[in-house]
Image 1 (spheres, helix red, strand yellow):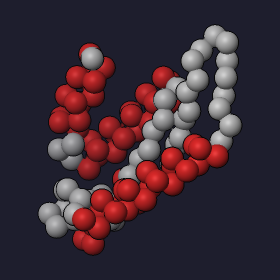
Image 2 (image 1 turned 45 degrees about the vertical axis):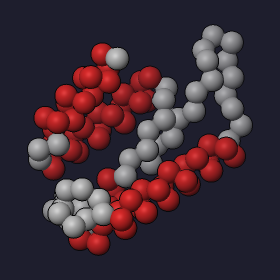
Image 3 (image 1 turned 60 degrees about the horizontal axis):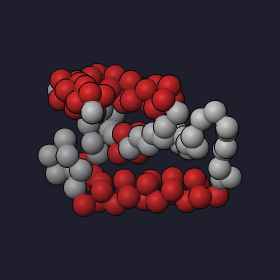
Length: 102
């Protein structure tokens, strides 16, 4: 629970700027790799040149609109489909985990 709390606190602090958001995304990706857990980033699919959301994916430049959530849902569906196609990795020392990086 402490890790989740830390992530939430970092998120609130870092999401104030585009640079902070990029830093948070990088940190989450590295954390997922270190912990052997999956990570799916939406940012690159919906971001504009000014590091905000593309106009077609947001009505307020911060939160996704219906079109933005459709893109995100497609990314999740594609990631799940790829994980289902991949044979599971089994190790006697560690529990089975899958990793996904986009």
